[in-house]
Amino acid sequence: MFTLNPNSGIPIYRQLVEQVRRMIAGGQLQAGHELPSVRELAVEHAVNPMTISKAYSLLEVEGLLIRQRGKPMQIAPQKKSQLTEQARLQHLQPQLEQLVMAARQLEISDAQLISSLQKLLESPAE
Image (cartoon, rainbow, N blue to C red; front, side):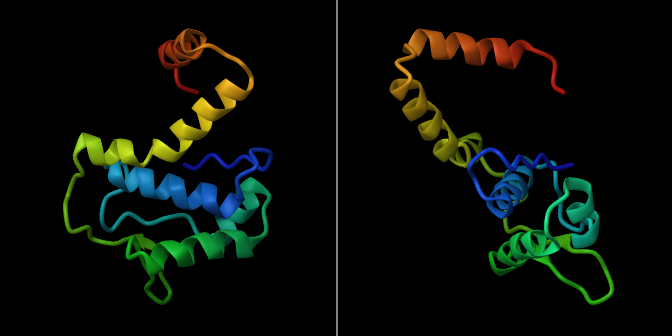
């Protein structure tokens, strides 16, 4: 369900928070959907359970998750059922800016970057 990369330079809990936000914004996670338990995710990704708990707690404070005693964390009902495409794109903005900055630091031309992205987009999803 989630892809966590300990070598990305982004803290694991932030990766999880961002993925849940994007999946909610994109409609893949709907209100009432149950998330894996803290223990399950920690074992699956070989991370400290406190890392997963921190991510879930931040999402709960944001109002994206709800906690019910004895039940798994669930996606909270959202005010709007679906965000506009522009609003969904805003969730990608930090990663896009980071990608552009890295490409410029590596002296990769815009055309090369766009070509690489196009190839990646055309390849089958893993």
